[in-house]
Length: 299
Length: 225
View: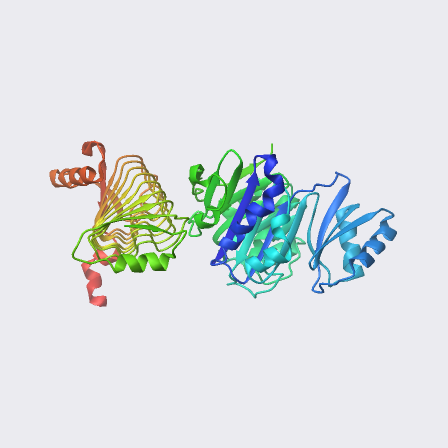
């Protein structure tokens, strides 16, 4: 069992309150997932020639400035660093692939959580309320956010096994359910050059989407492919730079409820997690149909 | 009698409901509901309970004798294993509504999601909207009435439950077939529609039931036991 929550703001005037609106949604799903939690927030976008990296390290006092100095030297460009607990957000003018290489060489114990123009993924083992507090979620601003509370079934309780999983530039996945063909699919994807860090089934779903997107599929096409190629049960929420998508497997064992008002679109595993949103009493509420891809976002 | 779930826990409210005298009827209103699970479960009293708000999972589960009205949507498993009484959802119901229920009546004014009436064992269900896939799966007894459409695999592996559908059926499950609507079925359906407050014409419905061709129905297989 796991909990999924997502919030997309249609009214940009609420962007300053995104974290504040979202925090109780995440915490409300503690009963479905008390062992780890995480979220991917979109906002504070950098320019087209820039990238934004979210990095994490076991050491709360990791000397991020040393990495920044190394990157500044190698790429001859300024690097800004923002600390958040044991994570750091770096912004610089560069391409993703060489920077990943440089960071890996500099210190392989640094975890690259996300890369993009807008996304920041923060996740950790522990109770959702502790993780929200650790990363000061309530003060965060942005246009949309998706989150996950985990009750591990298919692999260990580790930061690497918790969600969201990055699936490419500004893309991520959260999953409620379990997959039965993940071992064979992992092998197939590894042959296509997708790398995996854990035995986790959801990471395979993320790897599958990464592969499909890399091959040029749209988010819609990649998710339609997932319905065909992934065996098991799932509710997925996929974060993109512009919004988020929701899809349930055709059997739809795993719950999902949606709410829409003039101000926002929200999704959660249970209505309980939506009940603190403003104007929820009069929101349009519905359950997404099985086997159908839904997308909300700009454009 | 009134309760407010912003001030009391579900456990306290359920205990207070269970402590009501069993030989008297009473009217209870519960407010402050925000998707809480297990509301008004295990009632064994002839009381009328009105729940104002959207209920979480298993609302009115195992109900016996009580009339429970939900002024909102209901989460997964509303009225699951109901024995008798009446549960009325004014909004939509999530999946597995009235699962395994033995008796009583469940009325859903909106839609019910997948697996409505799964393994139903005598309950009557009237859904004014549509139902999702695999509804009445392994239904053993009772009636499922749907004024809208039914999703994929309706009545899969059905035993003796009666299914009455007014709208389109996306597909029939294994061993489920359309059957002749005889006078006794029209009578049964009319009574249920009336009880649920529907003015739909019983003649506009089609009846579905078991073709009795699966393993369980073959007398040759009796020697296996």
